[in-house]
Image: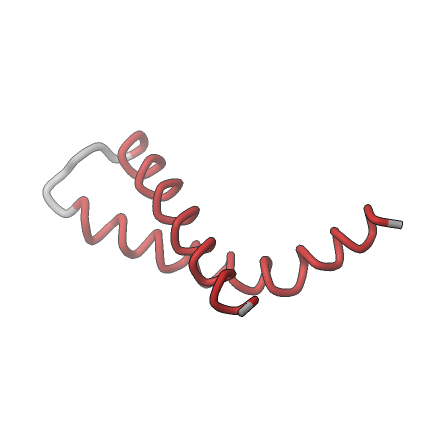
Length: 64
């Protein structure tokens, strides 16, 4: 269940953040979708391990 929710959270958050950043920095150029999907994939690959491994450590640290 944790992996499924992590994937959904990562998908949603990285989607709107990368869309916004690519739109602001590059604009809606002809290959916008390609640039956005490439940026999204990189962000998603980085976000999933962060949510799975780093977030629990931080939560545990602040709980004590």
